[in-house]
Every structure is written in C-alpha cells, then in structure tokens.
Length: 471
Image (cartoon, rainbow, N blue to C red; front, side, top):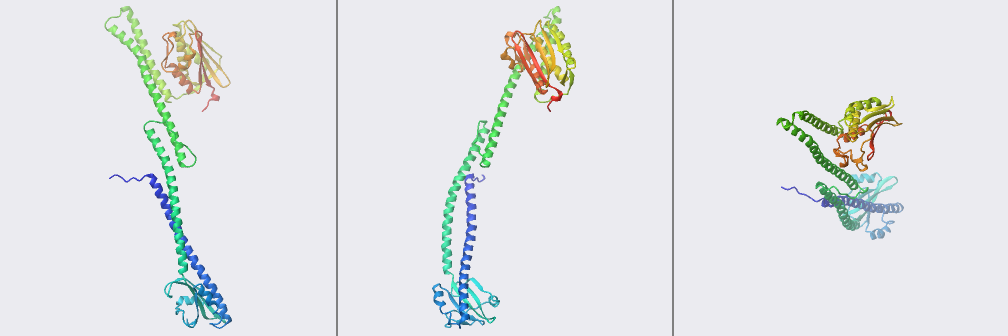
C-alpha cells in the first residue's frame, strides 16, 4: 500500500491553525472563568456593602423600623434580604416573604467567628440560582443573628453569555485573519522549497550553473547560501574531472605516439637481424640503436612514474645543505660526454662556499633535465652552470648559446610531451621540464626562463635559504 503523503503546504497551514485554535481555546476558557469569577465577586461585594449599611441601621433602631428605607433601593436592583436571629428564625420581613434559610453547620461556623459568609452560586436553597452573603449581627460582644442578602445571577449570566458571544465572534475573525496570513506565509515558504527542489533536480542532472537567492533573514537564506557553495564546488569538481579526462586522453595519445617510434625502430632492427637483412658491418650499429631506443623507453616510463608521484604528493624531500660547487660539478661530469657529441662545453661558474638547501637527488634530477634540454638545442656552443646567493634565495642558472625559444612558446614548455616549433628541428621537451617545474615547486622555489631566438636560453631557479624556509 502506498504511503499517505500530505503536502508540506497543508502541513504548515494545519500546524498554524492547530496552534492558534489551542491557544484561543485555552485563553477563552481562562478569560471566561476570570470574568465569571470577577462578576460573582463584584456582586458579592455589592451585597456585602448593602449588608454593612443594614447592620448599621439595625444597631441604631429596632428590627423592622430603620431598615425600611433599604427595601425600595434593593428591590430596584433585584436584591432581597432578611434579618435572622441565632436560631435561624426570620425577624424581618415578618410576613415571611423570604423562604426559611437553612445554613449548614460549616456556614454557621463562619458567621459565629464574626466573618462574612459569601456564596457566589447557590442552586439548591432558593427558588432560583442566586448569589448571597450573610453578615453576622453582633450586639454587646455576642452573636445575636445576622443579615442575609441574595440576588439572582440571571443578570450576571446574561452578561457572561453576551461576553461569550462577543468572544466567539472575535475568535472567528482572528482565525480568518490567521488563516489568510498562514496561507501567505505557507505559500512563501513552499515556493522557496520548490526553488530548492528544482535546483536540486538540476544538480542531479549534471547542471551545476544554479544560483538560489541568498538572505540573512532566516535559515532558508543560510541553506540557500550553503547550497550555492555546494553547487560551486560541484561545478569546479566537474570542470576538474573534465580537465583530468582531457589530460588523460591527451596523455594516452602522447605516450602512444612517443612509444610508437622507438618500438617501431626496435621491432624493425630485430626483424632485420633475425632475417639477416642487415649487413654484418651494420649489425653493431643496429644493436646500438636498439639499446638507445630501449633506454629511451625506460626513461619515458621512469619520467611518467616520477611525474605522477610528484603530482599525487608521494615524493618526500630529504633536504640538507649542499655545496653548490660540488652539485654543479656532478652535473658537469655526468653530461660532459653527451655535450661533447654536439661539440658543446659545460662550464661551472660559482664561488666556493655557496650552499644550497634542498634534496640532493632531486636537485641533480632538476639540473640534469635542464642541461640535457640545453644540449639538445645547442651545437658548437657552451652551457654555463652558475650559482650565487641573494639575501633570501640561492639562485642556480643554466645558460646556453643554443637556438633559443620563441616568446610564445616559453609558457608552453612545461607541458608534458610538448614539442618545439618545427623551425627548431625535431627536438622535443618530453616530460623533463614538467618534472622540473613540479620539483622546484616542491622545494618552495620558483623557476623562470629567459630566451632570445637565435641567441640562447637561460633557466633561473630560486630556492629559499634554510633560514627563510617556510614550514
């Protein structure tokens, strides 16, 4: 069986009206009770006031003489009274117009203590429901009787009935106004929820360009602000995922292209050797070519692994203070033969005692990649390795006299597998400079490139001193 669903709009109206009805009911009952008690109390006080006057008249004259003047006044207000003695016998009026009054023992106890007996509502001892008071009549310090005054409550009941009608009318008008306001407020809240529902549906369909109106008025405004922040983060994540997917496709295409050439070369040479298609004097050259291409593939795989480790923060640096002269001479010795093949010289220029703070292995990797790149694009020239200190940084420079880089290409050389312009020949930057950029950033440093077409290129690396290193 399908669960019963009630729209939030109707839930709001029902909750508002329920609260109002309960509040009105409680307030009405309390108000009516208060007014009723007040009316009976007021009537009792009025009767007690007349009773005090009658007692004063009794003290000044004999019963039945001085109190005659009160009769027309009290009857005009629908009040009857009697004077009785200690044995409950009626002394006035003598005609017995008032029924015999039977007071309970508890009520007599109140009178005997010299206190006024007040009964706000009595329905048993009189012909109609009345309010009555009985005042003790004391003479020479002793109780001799009392005065009882009674008034029907019909007038009070009529007043309370009229009050109840007016109160009911007021409640109905207030409920009508409250219902109208509830409809407006509920519609406003539901419309805001509906906007959020539509925005959520758009998010679920992959449309993240949604924006809800924000306000500081209530929690709906805070929710809208949080929703917009969520949508923005989802949009950024979606864009990042799309960029990563595009990079993945490009990476696969680049790797496939980079590996195709050496694999084709290796396969061709091996096939030629197996079928004796390569002359004896060319076999050594073919084997050397296979070896070079194999090393190229291994370097490509290692560079990819390094690049991904650096990007995913899996590389931890072991920093130490390194002699700059020693570091540059290591690079010079490792790449001197490779530079000589293109008739280049590697020159080290640094003052003794200069210290670089960094990871020795990673700094060698950085400089090796840059110098190899310089060797690739320099012929019959020189490559200068330089190190010097400033107040905040230790600067390492690799400057060559090669063909240079176009200004438009400088910002592009950090991309993976970026190939130079055809006018520079078949050279390419591969992954080397991408790794260099990442490793320099990992050292909290910066790398800059200055180049002029046909005159050479200079790479400048700035690494902070140990004393300026930020944690």
